[in-house]
Image 1 (cartoon, rainbow, N blue to C red):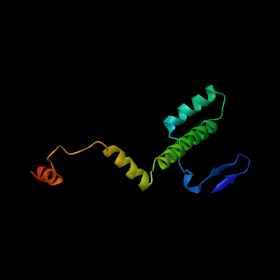
Image 2 (cartoon, rainbow, N blue to C red):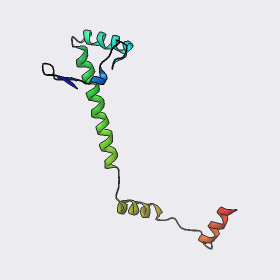
Image 3 (cartoon, one colour):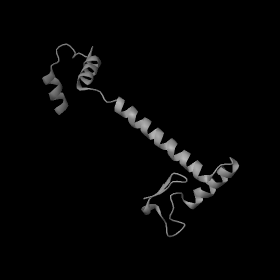
Length: 104
């Protein structure tokens, strides 16, 4: 890894390219990035950095939301019991009848 202290940019050796077509930003997108940067009077690397930062922030938010949605086993059991309230077998029907019905 190479760190440029002047810009605080890091370049990994595996990211270095011998040919200009082997880059992190494909040539067709690079044209768009450069045009957008020129329109906004910004550096292309600034736009790319901003885009990657936003992506990673959204990714972290999605992961955090997924982690929060995990419930304990007690919460899951309580939820199942709540959903089962009012679900009764019709009069005269047993669990064995349901099992045999499922086998038919």
